[in-house]
Length: 91
Image 1: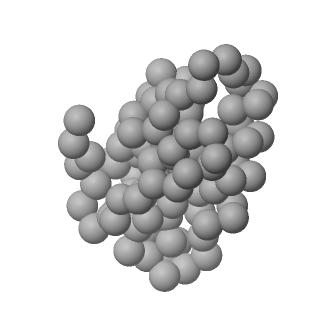
Image 2 (image 1 turned 30 degrees about the vertical axis):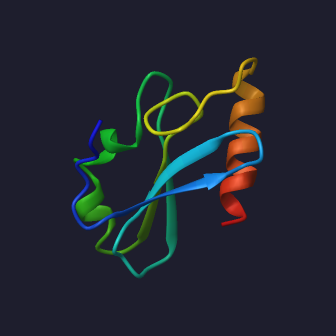
Image 3 (image 1 turned 135 degrees about the horizontal axis):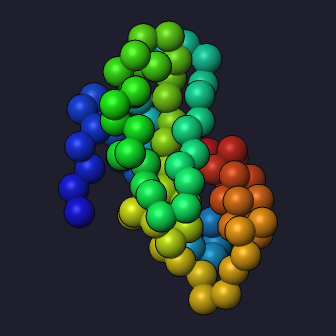
């Protein structure tokens, strides 16, 4: 898999349970976190990142088990969203 997000840098953060892949855009405005839905990944936002980056610093992440993020053995949507968002906000 190759990310097609021009101008974005790509990173990972270890939550202690799994690694989460995320990208940071070149913008300098207020932060905006884009979260994809189930069965998608962060580069699904590539059609809107250019315009959003004009006024925002855009962050995008792959939810657990999607794209470049790892997956836990047992998980629920609620746990995945809560733990991932809390871990991401610490970076």
